[in-house]
Length: 410
Image (cartoon, rainbow, N blue to C red; front, side, top):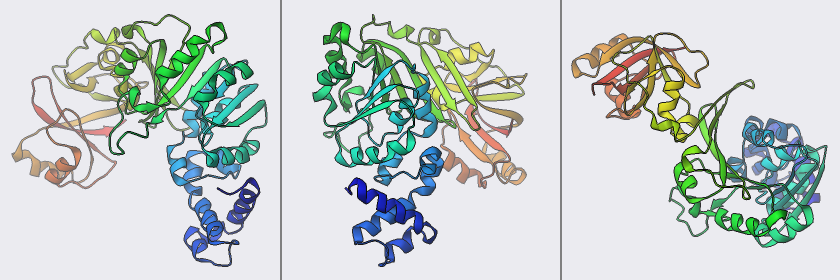
């Protein structure tokens, strides 16, 4: 890992030669004093486009990114700023898994005091270089080391009100195993909660835990006490993370009563939010006996939290089928948290109609929900080109019949 002084040189060279592109830089022997330095400059240039899309404020500050993997795994600017919105100025934060520092940067902007802890020397060095270029208020402290081993000392020294942790897959987990349980992650939330509770009155009042969207929400609630709320955070419809708000010194609410909060961060500052509980999900949503003028598809954050029944009831909608999480009605509901499509035609899924559909609608997007085929196989069968002008929703209706619903986007 280059020293802080070397980082200044790498970033200066990347600005000077950015116009050449990363491939030409990597092959230009006159750039940099060594092969390693030239490769580092090329890597910075190669990551600029992704950095600009994901973290525009960081791109503008001309920060150093340790690797493309670090950039890929980091929070986006929008999701990081959401975490900052959950804090108060008077909160004192310790980020136990600082990483590349994106979440720390966002939260530190609104706090008077924030502490960054990271075990990796490479990430620690990069963060010490970057943060003075990104933060202009408050007091920040930077510590390299194992946060779990240092936790009692950290809490005694800095008296935090909030701990932030982003557990990663345990090193003993198989690389190809999908993570579904908090037991598969490190640092252990169970150990952290136990350590905090032993501190009694000196303990932080909150733990914010950022988790993989692959984890099962109900499993988390059933196996970890003191969770006061769960967020599913999506960016433009794609779920990016789960966020647990844990209050270690307060009584544990029942699993059925914990608030489930979905947030879909859209373009130009717009957002869709929705809240419910597993208790509310027990009451069924009506099933539609016929299609209305519009169909509604919930965003990914709502689907992740499993709020299928309560969503339909709260918006006065009916589901197409018990296991089809798509809704319908006759009147447009413009603030629905998800995708809205206008029904144009309904095609029964029958072989004799497939050729006719292909002739009349040669191109369309395809979405399959509770349908025997996936989107790719259905596209091959229909022989449709991809197009955003129309959308085919392949699904199952209340009577079990399979249909292709031709729609246009509202």
